[in-house]
Image (cartoon, rainbow, N blue to C red; front, side):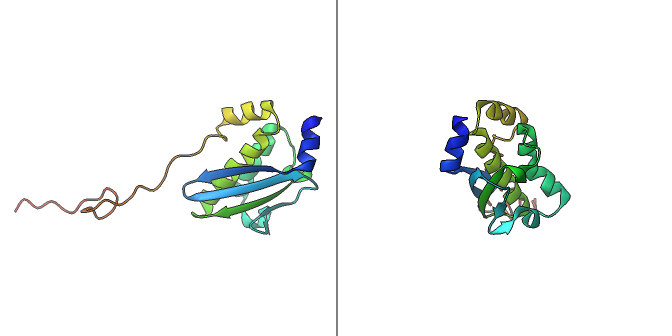
Length: 139
């Protein structure tokens, strides 16, 4: 019960990252308005696969409909659509994990609290791309 009172007073802040995307989330108790860059999350991530991905942390924790219990404001920058979606899922998971110990265990087991470390490899000098070499010529 004490956690619920804390949630009403101050928003839960979390940061999620994926590739070069960074998502900052401010989550608080409310009617269920989740905004990503000032746009409703259902419009920002409009496909069914994207909706399933961002709502998965809520379903794992036991919140049947994410829009029924929490209001959230999310700011996402960098990368593309997939990177931004991954960053939002990571941030949502981190925010939900702060609510209770049980949530943290569930989300950790499902892999939502682990940052995906895969990044684009840098281009090296002499090479055409990160690993592509010029054609070898013996003579």
